[in-house]
Each structure stands twice: as structure tokens, then as C-alpha cells.
Image (cartoon, rainbow, N blue to C red):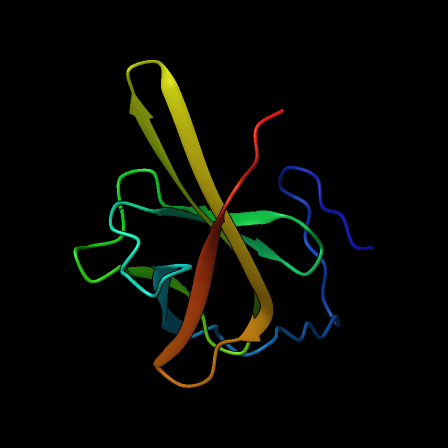
Length: 120
């Protein structure tokens, strides 16, 4: 470990950084069990250490069930998608998970199928 205080200098130390990360798009296609698009679904994305890297609060799946998230090429992620409907005090929730998926190139696509979660 190398530490420096205010105004302190060190020489003769070679530092190596990993190559700059390249942004990549993860395209998540969310569908219901019957194959229809899961319009309005959200996604929570974690790295393999379990650290949340993205949550699509304002970026919901479109009418085709497509949700795009900017992440990093070469990194691996676990994806959980969910959708909630509230009507007349009745809450129905669907959830689906997939992964790990490693982003390759500029864009990687996956499909997540949502299943109804039984409320107890």
C-alpha cells in the first residue's frame, strides 16, 4: 500500500492501471410467462460480488418489454427484473432472474421471463 500526505512526493514507483473500461449496453427483454412483453418492468443489476450496479427506477421497459442499461464491457452481472400492479388494494407482483451474463462488445442482449410471485 502506498500513501501520501499533503505535499509529500515519492519517486521510483511504477504504477500499473488496468486498461480503461469501455461502456456497453445491456439490452434486457422482459416477457411474461405467456410470452407477452412485460411493459413497465424494472431491473436491478448486480455484479458477481453482489454489489448493485444499476437499478432502473426511471428507465422502465417499453411497450415491447425492452429495457436498456449502460454498464461495462467484459464485466459479468446478475439481473433481476420485476413488475408490480396495484388495483383496488390488490397487489400482484412478477419477478424473474438471470445471469451471470458477461457483456461482449458494444451491446449484449438477454431475455428474462417474469413469473407471478405468490403472496403469503
